[in-house]
Length: 257
Ligand SMILES: [Zn+2]
Image (cartoon, rainbow, N blue to C red; front, side):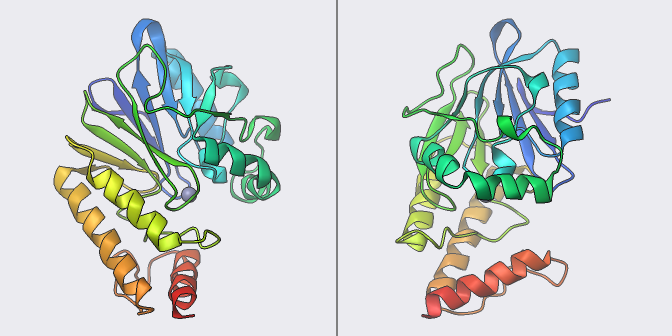
């Protein structure tokens, strides 16, 4: 029994009870692993640490895709591996720390707050470690310094909070050009060669066709919002969480100004 599922050789994904948030583990040499966005609840992080232990894996390095509270979590049991994020993300994790801690307290109470968001800036095209190549695709869509990870050997794109089957594009509306930033992000992801599976930050893993469909759905959403038009996105239904419908209405209003 375990919550980690192997989606490709040496690539394991767990899905949280909180907003279908994904945690990705990449197996490296000598029992080291790369841990991406470990989350979300205290119990889930404890379970993750225990399961890594059962698999004789120890985090050797960690990566946070972006500076939102549910992507910068950690626990003592996961050890003291270096935790990296893109430089712009690390800056926001510092300046927005109070809001991030509020998010943790509200969404997943009980974490050791001293471990939240303790990230080091990594300005590189790949994560430095001894395991399979982990290329970084950094942009400012959704959040500043949003860094997706592409594992070329496995053909897996860990997309962060983009390319979701359950969430609409969530724009960083405090940025100067939120739509441009998001479009740039989508273009960079679309240009990655050899994506056979996509792991969204929230939602379900998709194959190459699903990846293309999600990129197209995200672009169509941005086009409609840019025109200030309400849009019948299939991910927005009466079943969608209230926060997402509210955010959608805010995004439409934002571009109507
Ligand atoms: Zn996010």
